[in-house]
Structure formats: C-alpha cells, structure tokens
Amino acid sequence: MHLNNVGFLVIALTVIGLPAKAEACPLRLSKDVLQLNAVPKGWTPLLRKQELTLSAVGMLHGAYDGSGYLKPTVTKVRKAGGQEEFTSIWDFAPPPHYERWYFCEYGEAIELLRQVDVSARSCTIVSTREGNAITAMRIACTPADPRRR
Image (cartoon, rainbow, N blue to C red; front, side, top):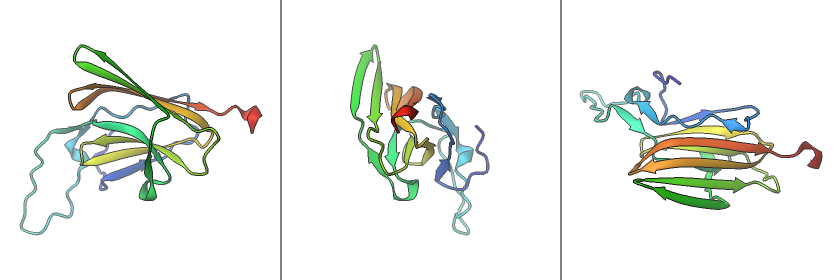
C-alpha cells in the first residue's frame, strides 16, 4: 500500500465483504504519509522519524468521525522471550445496529481505519509486541451464518 499523496491524519478505507482473513495493518508507514501542507508561512517542517511504526490495533463502533473504541469480549496474552502475543476477540452477537471498523494506530500521528463487513459475527486480532512496537499483526472476521438471519 503506497500512500504518498495522503493529506489527512485519519484515513478511512472501506471494504465490501471482508473475507475470513482480512488485510493486516501495515507494520510501518513512510513519513511521506504526513503531508505538511498547512505549515505557517516562513516555517520549515522537520519530520524527525523516517517511518512510523504500528503501536496499537483494535475495533471501533460507528463511522470514524463519531466512533468509540470497542472493548474486546476476550483478551489473552502469551509471553515468549522478549515478545508478548495478544489475542483479542470481539463478539458481535446479536449483530449491533452500528458499523464496525478496525484501526491501526501509529503513535499519536495517524490512524488507518478499515470497515468490517456488516455480516461479521466476530473478529479476532492477534498482535505480537516487542517493546513499544507491534512486530506482527493479523485479523480474521467470521461472517454470521446466513441461515440464522
């Protein structure tokens, strides 16, 4: 995913029909995603980091402009060496009346958002953390059984 010409600090990406294995958050973003078009005249910006690293993942309810963070139904933590693996599950039964999105946070600089298909019954996010950075991440959403609608 190349985001050279993005001018927003929050980017909404919509998915129609999220498959069982959804696209994982990019682990790193180039500093080029931060376009500094609104710098006051006479000032020169300096971006100190060459890239932004993934620092948090999770689920939101509602559209990104009026959303709130969803608490996982279950969270499990497994430690191995200097890494921690977090498995978080969100159960959407019965189906909620609001849209669901998952987010990828890069420090306090930017969040990427992707909409989850309305038919999703649950979503599981597994992330591996080393220090303050997420080094691996995957997401899978399970669609509701169409016979139970």
